[in-house]
Length: 83
Image 1: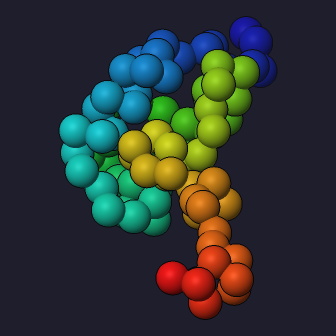
Image 2: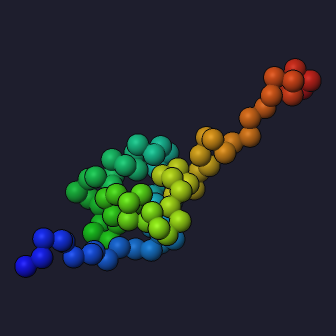
């Protein structure tokens, strides 16, 4: 008997995002709580950042359809004063 657990079958990253976006989570922490809950379907990984790391995983926010804060446009003080 092998000590390594067999690889589980999960949804593809695009299907995972479709499901997560359909649930309408407002915050990443809410998504993470749901992923750790007993109500999570077996086809949804508890740790998607690990499962999808080689498939283009970016962030929990991106999976929810939101832009990470670091990618938002920041206005300079000069731009604010001229507005």
